[in-house]
Image (cartoon, rainbow, N blue to C red; front, side, top):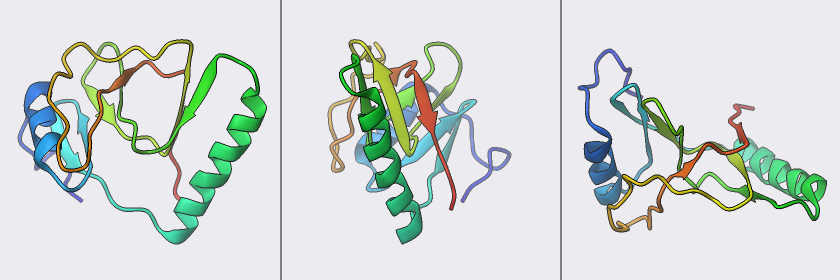
Length: 122
């Protein structure tokens, strides 16, 4: 995996263009685009268990649980990534700069300010 020190700085628009054309996921951290590692069998199982348990706990609340295919971004700051699990309450607000069409992975627009992000390494 690249480190922020060796990766060139890119705008959010450049990051989105890279995501649109890429077969793998990347995160955008303080202007640097970093390739994300794939999950192991144990990692994927833990993610599935977290999603099931969170959905059970949320019940009839207006919150929804999303998998690692949903990109998330802070409303302010220079960070976008794919958390292992994210929770959005109420209507999902999508980032206004995300106008890049879907690419080979079907990349969606970034959800802004989710209520919870879970990332883990078993």
